[in-house]
Length: 483
Image 1 (cartoon, rainbow, N blue to C red):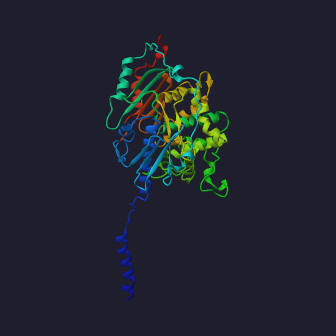
Image 2: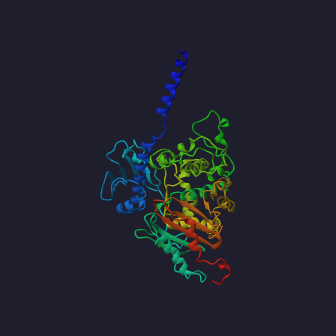
Image 3: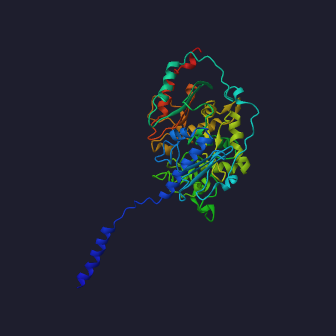
């Protein structure tokens, strides 16, 4: 009897375990994913129409092409566009996942929280830009847009350069669409080409090229002694601990986050890119600052590389704190950089709380990005004035050990030439963004290359392949040749 009593519970338990064995296969983030999907469409449509000044047909054909199931078509659908007030509503009939975006002067479109309506539109941030004193069309390049016809260098192979351009444009596929290509040599535009429907004034989203703009501004503050590369960020982390002494995140430095090696939990990885993390700030109205601060430490800072939008936004928060007040913070990008080098068609977007989303939400022309690259190619000097120190440029070009352990060539918010490449100059480095945004600096050839795209699918366009094709037009020993 005792034997039966002992075996019966064991058999029941084992049978129960076998039947109830479970895997966690329910997507608990599906509600977020739907909101973000609609928010992506709201922001891209809003900026496509009112920041880039494209047609709705162009927006659907290209801006929204990488979305799996966009709402509606250019002919109509479950969306509302208010051209007078410059607003976009996606999934207008679905009260559970409706998303809204509104254009705001000086910063582009802002995404609202799911529970907000356009009644609060005047509470959203905006920036009143100072009117220009002179017409950029009358100011010579690079400060303005007046490009004078000039003789091309004798040593440059024009045929090979045109072939490089054709390589970029004519290989258009279901996944790759080149919008523009600029090549600068010794500071001058020697090749400029645009796709149909795009011109030198078309502003498109930089995606993560914005990170390289952000690190430029941060470097200026480091040069001024207002920030320190190897000092702790000095921010208030969430959730708040009783004292900073017992919060291990207090040891994270500016260098750590700029090298993408903060050691913080990576909320934008593991299939959660469009479900949580920075996606909620980019596309669903969450605070970019709170999300960046609300992560736990899972590795020692500086020991492991993991590409994370929030690491950039932590550095931007440190920049904001160093500047001291909101007005100075909002004016800083334009006064310190854009106005000085002629990036007059660049808008830096914010979340609805007024914090710059400097990890992705920037709209700029191809020429403006060429000016950014030129500042680096000129080693931080513009019109005889040093805007960025040589030491800071060395920092952004120095490979981080943490990235190297993963086989990644990455510096400080700039990408470096892969070790495996032997067909491009080793001193080249690039700002890179989603959907084919590239700014390449090749100091040894006095080159800046800008490619803007609206790629989708696997996005197989390779920045170093493009660099290889352009460099072919410039002999390695051109500096010794008679021009």
